Image (cartoon, rainbow, N blue to C red; front, side, top):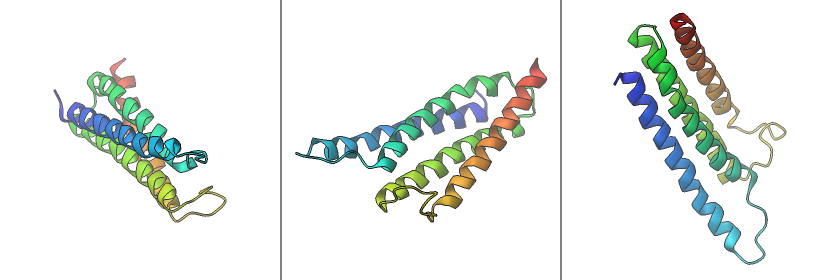
Length: 135
């Protein structure tokens, strides 16, 4: 098993676990009598982490297929996992600080979202080149 595969597996499972853990405060909030809807960014953080975890785990196959040097695949894996951390942190902070709409409110977490977008794009781009080269 390569370093990239290990990074993706550990990062994917950790991201899934974080998403699952966020389900607990959602449940507690909703079980209260007359509870309001679940806060938007708690839902976004929960669903986003679960989806990101599944995506990261799915990228083990492109990492195996890639014909790029190991260093490139390892870098791509770190970039993709880092993206999940940035996005989960952004959404969690938005929830904890009561942000309703990060764009309308010009939330202070926008740089985390931008970092997440850049890192996922770079990581997926590297994997894409690697799998296209393998064809």
